Image 1 (cartoon, one colour):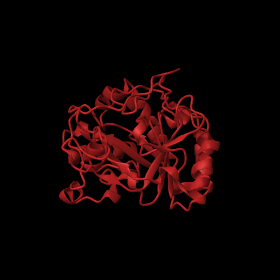
Image 2 (cartoon, one colour; image 1 turned 30 degrees about the vertical axis):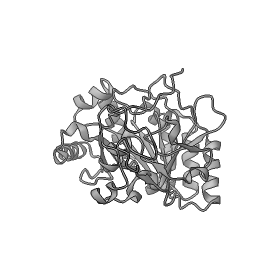
Image 3 (spheres, helix red, strand yellow; image 1 turned 135 degrees about the vertical axis):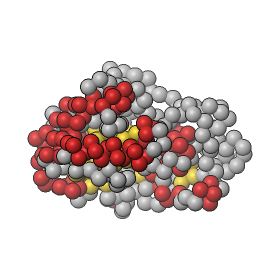
Image 4 (tube, one colour; image 1 turned 45 degrees about the vertical axis):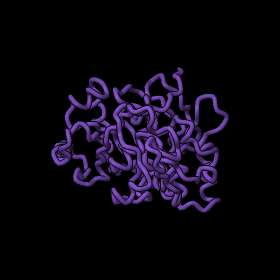
Length: 319
């Protein structure tokens, strides 16, 4: 199963997001320094059990542009984080669908045994349920340090299924209900774009759904229920300059790349690589090296996602 490695998306204005040092207008581009590696993300592979209409990473049952990473490869990065004294507290697993990687449970066991917290992003469908027994054992041993974040794009089946395929909502709700019955720490990720700008109404809709199904998620909590902005790189967005920090009254330390990195394993590569964040797994300019130490250099905000999702959207993948 193969798929081409995707090229970085291009904004509508072709002059934008070209030079990592300056914007199309000649202003100094904003950069973000790593203040401390607190969250390490692991992309377990781009293969997924479903194909969504607007997956930013284009995961599918055939896209293996990012191959399955092994537990041993992840352990090496955890060892390095300890050796360099990184203030690591959390390891997040994303995909694709992480539970398709047979090493995921071993990775989680390793992370939790080191006293770290673990976060898994999943659609909570059959691949997750195939690991039910192992997950229950991890949950009993680690409790609140293991969080399962379930992707539920909308609180109504029709909208969710429009994105993820007919019947997807029902299958995800079955997995979500199973997690709730067994006392897992659950978070939910939705799509802000479905709310047409009315976040309060979206959260009220999720709250009603959670009550009806006994899901212990506080829909008013922006961490427990994350409503992510859309990431359409074909929509023109402004570039972020150094002056934007004061104009927007925003600190660069609030962005993901100030405290996180992601490990990926490219198809055919001998070893994994470290990239700037979860949103930019393919672009070569955001590949920062083969080790955590090499990846500690500053990141230039030279992509539409940097502006739309992180700076202007105010979103972050971590807790």
